[in-house]
Length: 244
Image: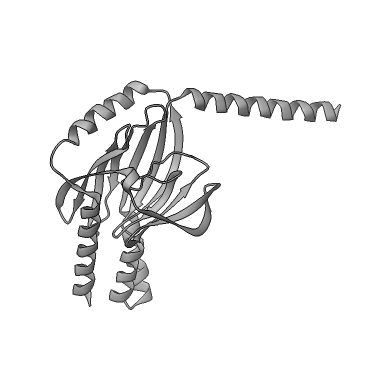
C-alpha cells in the first residue's frame, strides 16, 4: 500500500511540474526583478581609503545599502524585444548616488537604447548587444540555484557580470546584454545589481504598451556604449584622484 501511495505522489509531482512548465511555455513575457545599490567594488575601495575607522566604514556601507533602486526587466521570448525600467527608489538620508539607469529598450534585432543619469546629467546611449566585447572568465558560482559564469568587458575590468546559460536569453539589467544567458548579477563603476525574482506573464498588451512608451523615449541624439563606459571611467578616476 505504501509503495502505491509513494508511486502516486511521484506521479502527481511529475504531472504538476509538467503542467507548470507548460504554463510558462504558453506565456510569452518573462519578468525579471532586480535590486540595485551604489556599492560597487570601486566604491567600496574608495570608502576603505577615505574612512580608516572600521566602525565608521561599516556605518557608511550600511547607509549606502539602504538606498536602493528597484527595476523590472520584461522580455518577450517570441519577438526578442525587452524593456528594463526603474520601478521605484528607496531613498536614504545623507546618501547621494552618483547616478542610475532610467530605462533600456532593446528591439528585436538587438539594438539597445537607454537613458542614464550620471552626476545630475542625463544622456541617451545606444548600441548593438552583439558588439559588446565580453570576455568570459573561468570563474563560476551558484546564484539562486543557477550555475553562473563570469564575464567582464574588454578594457573595462571594473565591469563584471554573472550570467547563467541555464536561462539561454541574452538579456540582463541595463547594458549587461549580449551574453549566452540571462545576467543575474552585475557591477560597474558606480553600482551593483542583483536578481530578486522572475516569473512569466501572459499580459502581452501590457508589454506592447511598455515597448510603445520606451521606444518613443529612445528617440533623440544618443552616444555610444563605448562613450558611456569611457565617461564613467573618467568620472571615477577624477573622484579617486580628488579623494587622495
